[in-house]
Length: 361
Image (cartoon, rainbow, N blue to C red; front, side, top):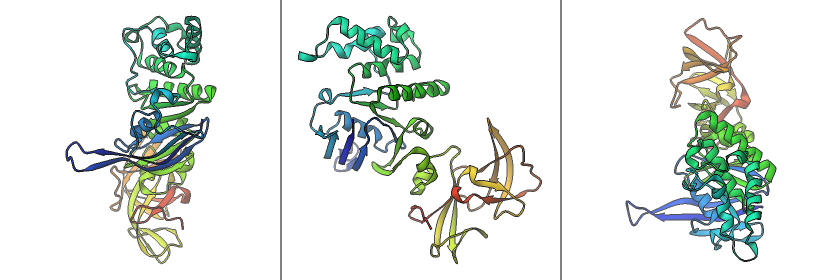
């Protein structure tokens, strides 16, 4: 099912200052295609969970409209929207078995939708097989791992065959390996069911690994929408560039003079843009060690993390929160001097104006 959010806005009265208004979602406009998995991505407090609550009907918008397909559901109650919701804390009934937890939404169906016990059992087993917990149906939540409990929560959301599946930080309570396994399960389930799915997370790696599209948010405002790799490769502003990528992008103060981009005294690339002060972002994989390279740094150390070897170095113009990290080929790289020089990959080097918007020229 296609989802359209039109000028969606949500305002709250501040708890600390009664006369102040907090805008959690600000003039949100997006069309989410039918059958896609969309990652809603941003730091804590950016409005992504509020957006999800507006879509499912747990919050009422201050302004704007919500459409499921061509149907305006803005004022429709949550139970009538055909939405499945999975929460961060699983929200399972601890005194019920897995089977009872999954069947519970079906027991509340009324009128022509009411199902027999046999039909409910059959439907519960169908979704249990989908999420691969059919052998756990008689266990209670306390007898299961976090990943298993999360799959029960997903099965319960799917049992009513919703048109939209909403996942609010569903992996944040799991350890690293289990997060990886469970996000792959979520992707598989979404592909098999074809349900339009919105996945809220602050973890950019999660969002980029399983999403068809990502929506990057900041302060309730959409910053950029696109395929994950396209957004990573072509950020529209410095916030997006900084938010996506591990290790994070290296950011420097720079300037443009005579159609050249400078970091300190180093002219690192040509540009058609006019003279001005700028920020320069260089992805860790954008450095090429070279004796006659265009960019100079002071060597600190080598760090090896799994498959990546990074040169950690310094430059007085760097304004990143951490040291400069340049990912290099460990089979070819050897360090000899305190001063190290790099050439830079143009497609991994970005120039931003002082208002943090990318300069394309």
